[in-house]
Length: 326
Ligand code: GLU
Ligand code: ZN
Image (tube, rainbow, N blue to C red; front, top):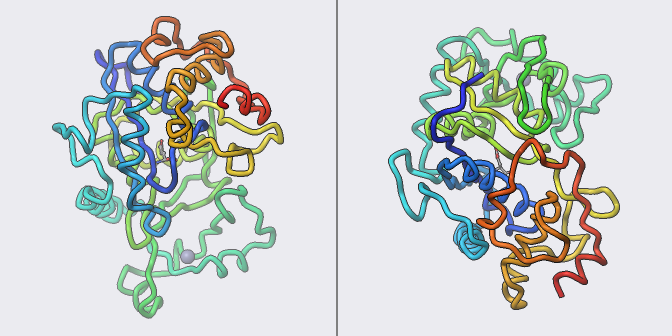
């Protein structure tokens, strides 16, 4: 894996599909702290390829929330930079070019299956809950070429799937340590394109083109890292280092969501709560500051280290939340 660059480059990569809340604030804060604590630069990239789920006003709100919280970045949609554009829907030519390379090398194949067909082809249709069923490879040898697939699809959209090898991908995770995941056993041959670049392809193209060498994100994306490592290898690019941090959960152990109360950053701001209260909560959740203390991101920098980060999931107690952010 890559040697650390002189000045590390990290990124914040929000999807404008909803409001910034305490859960993603913690992940973004850790990404920012990790890079800034080593004097590196931060890139803001808006991941808006998820068509139907993207809310048009969410990007401006995200930027405003992050600024209010004290985040800064050297490159991003609002400040520009040499490796832009910093909004995924403006980067489509790069994704098309990468898909073209994967097609030329035979790393991907066309797939005409609908979700229902995939589930019907499986005896036990229980893939990882968030990712749907494992793709059984039905189309891997079905079509002689793209034209044959298009003819078979009869006007329906075709997808491009990456041929995942039967082997584990290994990486040294900066938070979880020695890590491994078998993509073929997990999701199987995975989609890199369906009408548009899929997340897996877009994120690899962008992180490579933006010279990102550290990706710190929530551990819901842990298994995605193995897929992304396969794409880096197929495209001949050097992967960044990865760090997966635990998500914030409610006392029921489930990922922070509406049912746990309103934790949107905008609502604290509207209620007159200082950003330092929220950053103070992040600090205390990492053992960097006392419970209930107020902090700025910069004040958390001196004591920050990825190695010292707690590995457990962070539980936001609904009652404690009420007390803190009244
Ligand atoms: N845009 C993704 C999200 O908000 C993050 C992708 C990544 O960090 O790789 O979940
Ligand atoms: Zn198929």
